[in-house]
Image 1 (cartoon, helix red, strand yellow):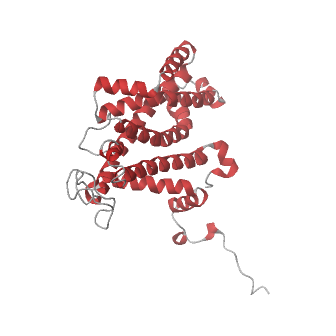
Image 2 (cartoon, one colour):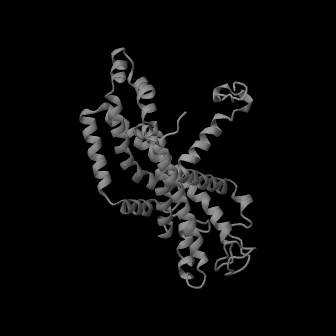
Image 3 (cartoon, helix red, strand yellow):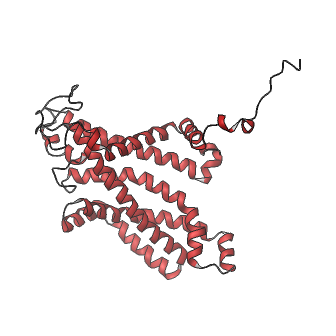
Length: 305
C-alpha cells in the first residue's frame, strides 16, 4: 500500500529549471482572470507595433496613388480611396498619430494633474482653497469650446493639439489625485515621518507618490482611450494634424463622408480602428484598476503573488 501511494510534490520543491519565469506566470494568470483586459492588452500591443513599424507593415506609402476606388481584395485589404491611396496603409500610418497624441497628451496631462493635486492636498489651507476654485472654473467651461478656441488661436498642428487636449484633461484628473493624496497624508506613517524631522520633499517622494502611483497609472491608461477619441473628433472637424499625413478622424471626414454610399469601406475601416483602440485602452485600464486597487484585490480582482 505504501509503495503504491503517489507523492505530491509542492510547487516550491520543483527544480528551478522546471519553473516558469515569474512574468510568464503573472501574464497567464492575468489572461485567465481578466480575459477582456488581456484582449485590450493585445490590441494596445498591435497598435504600438503598427505605430513603430508602419514603414515596414504598410505595403504602400500613405500618399502613394496606386488604384482609384477599389473595393477590399487580396491586393488591397481595405480597398482604396478616391485618390487611389491604399486605406490599409493609411490606417497603419494613422496609428502613429493616435499613439503619439495619446501618450504625449496623457503624459503631459498626468504630470500637470499630479503637481496640482498633490501640492493642493499636501499644502492645504488657503493654497488648497484657491487652487480648487481655479480647478472648478477650469472644469465649468465646455471642453470642446476651450479646445477649439485654443486651436483657433494657436493654429492646427500636432504640438498644439497635444497642448490643448492636455490642458483639458488635467483638470478632472487633478481632482482624483488630490482625493487620493488626502487619504495618504492622514496616515500615521506620514505623521511619524514629520515627527522624526523628514523634509517635505522626502515625504512626497518616499511616502506619498508611491502610494498614489496605482491611481495615476489607472487614470492614465483609461485616459488614453478618451484622448484618442477626442483627437479623432477634432481631426474630423478639421482641427487635427494637417493633410496629407493621415489621421483616422480626418479619413472619416471629407472623402470618407462624401463617398460613403459609393465606397463605404472608406469610412468603415477608420471607424473600426478608432473603436478597437478605445475599446482596448478602456478594457486594459479597467483590468488594471481591479488588480491595483487594494479594495478590489481582496475580492478576488487582483493577481495573487
